[in-house]
Structure formats: C-alpha cells, structure tokens
Amino acid sequence: MTRQSYEEDGEYLALVEDILDHPVFRSMEQYIQHGTTTCREHCIQVSYLAYRICKERGWDCRAAARGGLLHDLFLYDWHAPVRVRGHRFHGFTHPAVAARNAEAYFSITRRERTVILRHMWPLTPIPPSTMAGMAVVWADKVCGLRETGATVRAIIAAVFGRRPAF
Ligand SMILES: [Fe+2]
Ligand SMILES: [Fe+2]
Image (cartoon, rainbow, N blue to C red; front, side, top):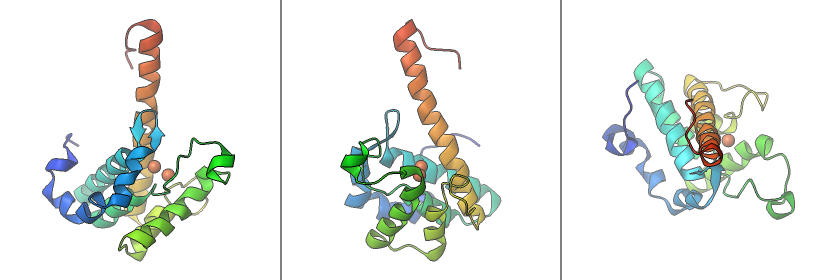
C-alpha cells in the first residue's frame, strides 16, 4: 500500500468531512493518545488506514472511515489520575463512552456504532461483526504501536545521542 495523505484524498474526505470539521471532533486535539500523538491525529490515522484496507478489498470503507474516526471519542485525558477522570478501567470502558458520544454529536449508522463498540477486541470479548470492524481493530493496533515506537525511539535518541536503527 503506497503512502498517501488523507488530506489529498477527495473520496475519503467526502465520507468524513462533517466529522473532521466538527468542533467536538477537533477538541480531541487537546488530549494525548500515545507518545506525542493527539487523540484527533490518532483517530484520523486509524480511520484512513482502515478505509484504505477496506477500499482495496471492496469492503465497507464508509463504515471503516467513520467508525475509525470516532472510535476513541471518549473526550477526556485517559492519562489523568482516576480521581480526576472519575472512573477506572479506561481500556474496557472507553468504547461504550465513545459510541455514546458519537451518537450524541454525529449521525452514525448501527454498523458504525458497532465498529466503535468493538474496536478494543480482543481486550473486550466480543469481536467485530464486519470486515470494516476488523480493519479498524487492525489499524488501531498498527497505529498504536507506531505511535508508541516513535516515543521509544525519541527517548533512546535523547539518552544516547543518536536514533536507534529500528
Ligand atoms: Fe480505543
Ligand atoms: Fe485507538
């Protein structure tokens, strides 16, 4: 798969621009997801990767694009102490919070809601029911590892004075 920017992909933008332009979606820029990547940026990367996987294979790329964009719409800083964010077990609970927020602020289909609800599989027990859902699960893991890896490389570079070869 060639590297391409989502901003230059008119077909993708047409499916998601109502979400990208929305102030609630934009507000995710204030929260860090992994390393130095914000929740907004993470959701865009997951959405676009899942979209392209589905598009290439003839799967539901609209559900992948929209579900992927909203999959982490939990709207709080998950690194904050439990007493600040008010609950434990973010890993297990945030898909339901994101699905609730997605329904409150956006027009989403049942299928897109299910993509959001099941994106943490296999940490949460019910697997995705569609290939779009599987693509978002995969894209989320790939992007998460990439984002965390970038931080590890930056720390190694700061400590040892040069960037590691991986
Ligand atoms: Fe998530
Ligand atoms: Fe995620």
